[in-house]
Amino acid sequence: MADSVSTPVKLAERVERISVSATFAVVQEATRLRAQGVDLVDFGPGEPDFPTPDHIKQAAVRALEENFTKYTPAAGTAELRQAVCDCHARELGSRYQPAECIITVGGKHGLFCALSSLVERDQPVLIPAPYWVTFPEIVRYLGGRPVFVPTDEASGFRLTAAELERSWVEGTRVVIVNSPANPSGAVTNAEEFERILDLCRRRDALLLSDECYSHFVYDGAPFSIASLPETKSSVIICGSLSKTFAMTGWRVGYTLAPEPIVKAMTRLQSHSTSNPTSIAQKAAVAALRGPMDTVKEMLAEYTRRRDSVITGLNQIPHLRCTEPQGAFYAYPNVSEWMERKGVASTIDLAQRLLAEARVAVVPGQAFGTAHHFRLSYATSMERIQEGLRRLYTFFSA
Image (cartoon, rainbow, N blue to C red):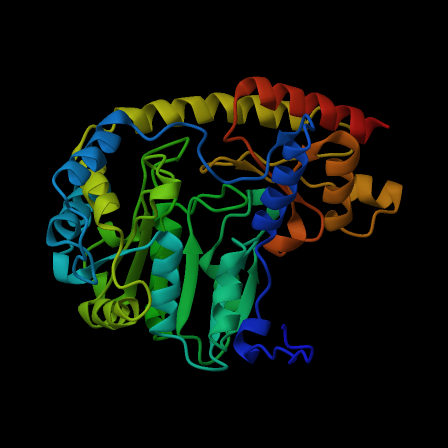
């Protein structure tokens, strides 16, 4: 017989400080509607619509056939850590050794472990806005204090050292920079990145660079602050195979950092996930040591889609959208439409778009701005055109 007396569940205060990912909430609702047979245009997920390349999948098959299914070292296999260092050196000009590398269960877990190893309670962490939703949530979970650095929409939301210095808070230990950026697509150029690093050094802070979209830059070559000489003591690089190699579900990320930080992260990982999946690590080696042709093909297709999306959005009444320089997101400003229609928030707007236009987007409140929404164009051109048609109809009404 079931116990008739229910005991109230009291959750830990640290987990009450964080909220459900807004992007996850959009994906969940979109999934529910699709299950009901709704014809939905889904601009929500930040996930490549391309398949994982065959040579990567075949490496996983071989790993299974060879029974590579046991625990690995907590920091990842020696083979994969070397492959990360070699690939980062080849593609982005750095000089890391395997002892300065840890393999994580996706890039997000790398960020979590790195920040967990560094951020003390009430310590400020500087985060440019708009920001990826998870940055401030990790900081809040750890008891730190997110400090948001505004960026200028007119310049494409590019972070500058001057903006960072104006927002500086005494006691800041970590500055997070995401370039190319989610959700804006902003790219911090090499000269500005160097000025940002110089500021961090003068203020005795670490620069954490999230390179998740490093290979999706539309003009110019990918850049890593770790390519500059004498930077390793002040820089943490968090990267991922998810976007570059269309491996989101494989959950393989990496962090390149000073050895004491890597050791601290390894201790934490050993008591949380034990190690990244053995099979996925073999696939990751094949990705990093194999041809980069599919990356170039994806970038070419994203460029085509970006041009179509930005042209289409800027033709919609009462919308304006800066052109992203990287990643695969558009971040249109809808302040004029919201004022005309008396819509209080982009959360309300996103709910209306889903209900009335059958278009899924992520509201700008999730990213720290009040008058934008994020549109992912990691979907087919056919769905992009249909989505733009629906958006035009909705905003013209």
